[in-house]
Every structure is written in structure tokens, then in C-alpha cells.
Image 1 (cartoon, rainbow, N blue to C red):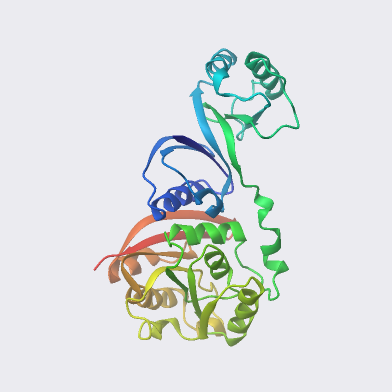
Image 2 (cartoon, rainbow, N blue to C red):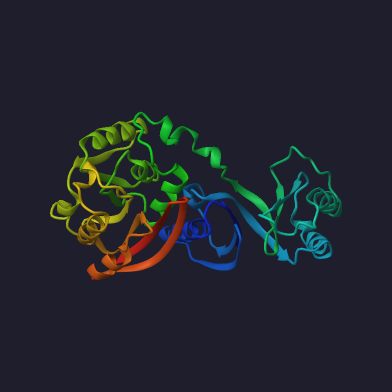
Amino acid sequence: MAFIFHLTGENCTIPRAEVLAVLESMDISFEVLHSYEQVLVVEAGDLGDAPHRLGMTHGVYEYLGYCDPTYRDILSLTRSIIQRVSDGFAVRIKRIGEHSKDLKRDKLEREMGGIIGKRVDLSQTSCLIVGFLTDRFILGRLIHSLPGTRYPRRHPKDRPFFHPGVLLPRTARAVVNLTRVKPGEKIIDPFCGTGGFLIEAGLMGADVYGCDIDAEMVQGCEKNLKHYGIKYKISVADVRELWKEYPNFFDALATDPPYGISASTKGLRLDELYRESVKSFYKMLKEGKYACLVAPHVVGVEEYAKKVGFQIIEKHLDRVHRSLTRKILVMRKWS
């Protein structure tokens, strides 16, 4: 069966990579059929719980077909799927960015509804037919709605312990998913801070471990993990020495080290902090497993990672503001 993943538009590459990483981690065989702006079409088996693991996907749809974004071709495609639509339905058109501005969404919705020939119930969502105006016109039937508002109680400001500068839950979840961690596997954040990655990993069923050199952060992280009912093992520790306690121990690693020179870095320069940290990351991971590292784009983490033996699988750029662009590296340990 083919599925459409309607991706969020906050980043150009992370949402697509997250979908593929989740399918891979769940051992779901798949083939990418089409990849357009905010729309990914994948042939796959049963998705199981995969949609509900995703952080940067709006919804998942049964794939009904695609065509050029013209009135004639869209209406022709609509005629071809009449037999696949139930008695109660609604038609919606979603325009991605500035694509096909000459096409009127309300006109398409009316004409497509008229072709299908059944009553268009605007309140009916049991059968929601959606057309995406992106590089092509992609047509699908809604299977899973995954609105971004599903994380309101996990916003950093709603946690018992808050510290500015942390990632939003959907981004933290995407980073965790990029590690390919599975439920029951062990994941560590060696710069755990307020626990954003550990919260998401714990809610997905992973066994979470964390540490931080700042005792206040560790105490705050514990409060947050307890708040969400997550079992954990965290401690005050220096990541550079942590591998001695956990050699070849973890199935995944996700972390976002501090960016400034402060007590939390023991006064180390950024380049020195990252260089020494990736050595420990490598020694803590099991062979063949993944680490996902967030870093400022000005730090040459790739060079440090390759030097210790990591293979760089993916690199994503995430612009925070004018003076800061983060890079998110997915690295795999090879012996």
C-alpha cells in the first residue's frame, strides 16, 4: 500500500528524514515513490504505530494518485477514484507554499465533490479526501491526523523545570527518531539539560539514561521526567569520562551540548568540548548504532566524528535566528 506523509514546513530536510528513520527502526520495508515539498509518498507494509511516533508530520494518508496541477488533470484523476470513496466524505485542498496560485482551492473542492457525485458533508471527517498542491497534485484519503497541537502539555514552559534555549517537543522527538531507537532499547543524552530528548524517548518506550555536569540541571531534569511518569537513570557526570562506566552499552544517543563558555562546559572552548565529547560518544555506543548530535554550524564536528570512527549518515541545517544556524548530524558507529 502507498502512503502520503504531509510533512511540516519548519525545516526542508528533517521531517522527511524522520519518517524514513522511523520506518527503518520499526523494520518496515518501504520504497520512496515521490518526494516533493512537504509531501512524501512511500510504498510500505502495515505502518503499525509508526505515525504516532512522528514529530514533524501533520498527517498520514492513503495514496490515491497524482497528476499535473491543472484543472483538467485534477478532475480526471478525481473521476478515476470515485469507487474508492465512501458515502460520507469531505474534500479539502491544501496548497503548499506558493505552488499553483492560479488554481482556486474552493473551486476545486466544489468540482471534485460534484464529480464524485455524493453529498459533500463539510463536517464529515470519517472520509476526508485531500489534494495537495505542491510540485505535483497529490491526492489522498486521511488515515491519521497528527496535529502539531498534540504536544501542548509538553511545551518547555509547561514543565516543572524550565530553562531557556531548549528545543520544542516536535523537534526533540524528530532528533530522537533520527537515532533509530526502538522501544526497550537504551538511549542516553550526556548533556541532558532539562530532559527534552529523554522525555520524548521515554514516552516512546525507550530506556532513558542521562547526565549533565551541572547539578542544578540534573535535579531539574529529574523533576521533569517524574512529571511525565518516565523511569530514568541520570547523574551528575563529565561526558568525557562517562564511557568508562558505559563502554559499548547504548543503542542510541541524542544530545544538544551547550553552545557557550560557562560553568556547564568547565570553561572549555566549543571546539574542544565537541572534540572530546565525540570520543566518549563513540565508546559508549554499540556497534552499528546511531548518535544524533546538535551543534552550531561553525563547529567542525564532522571532522572530529570521522576521526574517531563515526560515519556521517545525514546532515541537516536548522536556522534558529540570524546569528545561529544549528546542524543536526546523524552518525553511525562502525568498528
